[in-house]
Length: 312
Ligand code: NAP
Ligand code: GLV
Figure 1 (cartoon, rainbow, N blue to C red):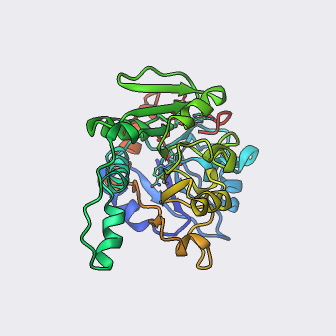
Figure 2: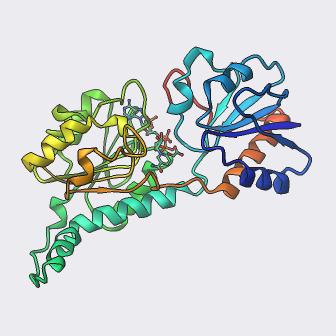
Figure 3: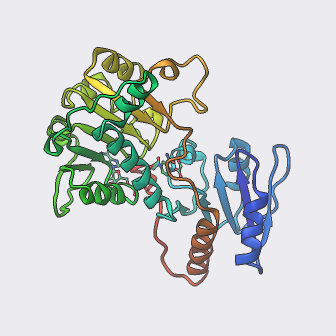
């Protein structure tokens, strides 16, 4: 069995080592621009080059494409030129707990006013601030999937009022759930801290614009850990400058790395991290992919299939 390993950043050696230890019977191959790709049974990719997908779509032997991450937008943007084989994303693979840690840190930082204490400490000020009543600090999680649910559970653990929004209706104990565009407005109006864990699709691109972010409770906070293009970035700046949004913690951006002249860098109410909220755990990922390859080889179904029509 031959498995293609490809990453846009070129770092495949550590992946090849994990595959060699977990699937010693399989041969792994790489690919570089200008090369002719050897026939492969499976491809394991992240941020593929267009020329590579062109070659893959000509391969009759290819049985499935696996992604080295959870988001599928960078692959589905190739649309009809993608090979007609199952596309399989990573499941939780250790990302859920990281998302819960990241979001809990950001929510608690705002709720316990650590952001304000950081500022005070810079000026040598010693001023205990009034505690915010927890019932006024509702957390609305957009996206109740593999990564949204661990965040919901963490927020419930700390006793925050939790709202959730998804495409299809859900019933989650202790959570006020909303579904579909018709229920977006009441979800946003009830939310003080908005956590975005939606996939980037044609329906979610630019969803969080001035109009929708403006429906959040005054003094709201935004935590975006999914994809930057879901936020209309200039609209977010406008709402932060007006004070309607009190602060934002952003891990993902429309253009990454965030360009040096971007106004977010100089806005003290915006905290920036470099797309690290939930990293791919390589060993966990390779184990998961190896199990799914074994299932496919035995004619069994696999989970985490991408729905090309829905876009996630
Ligand atoms: P998932 O399991 O596919 O869940 C997606 C959730 O979004 C589902 O609840 C889905 O609703 C909901 N949704 C999709 N389209 C919607 C729409 N139009 N309206 C309302 N709800 C919609 O995805 P996941 O594994 O939780 O991952 C979410 C995203 O996180 C990924 O797509 C990726 O972009 C991002 N991510 C970021 C990092 C990072 O380090 N920053 C790491 C990993 C992933 P249903 O439940 O009704 O289907
Ligand atoms: C990272 O952003 C991922 O989608 O896995």
